[in-house]
Image 1 (tube, rainbow, N blue to C red):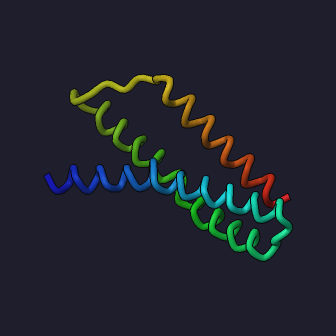
Image 2 (cartoon, rainbow, N blue to C red):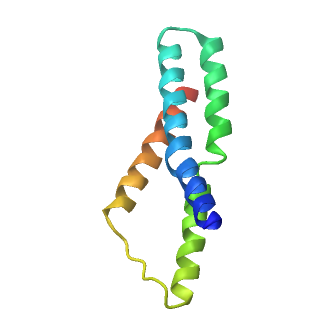
Length: 102
């Protein structure tokens, strides 16, 4: 039971909380750049870089779970529309972060 709760907490953190924090930092950096507050924008871009290093951990964890599940009889994995939503969010957040650095 503890293992499943720990896994759920890790997945919640890396699939929901960190992407939302990165999106918030990106919006704050964009707003600081828009208002010509370069030092504030620089600090927020630093946060985006720190959060970005962890942003793909959820994909790795899900890939490991899928491999383990498919190696046995436990589950079957199929591509659903959530994959496209996730890919769109990843591209949008990367584009916003790139725009903020330019």
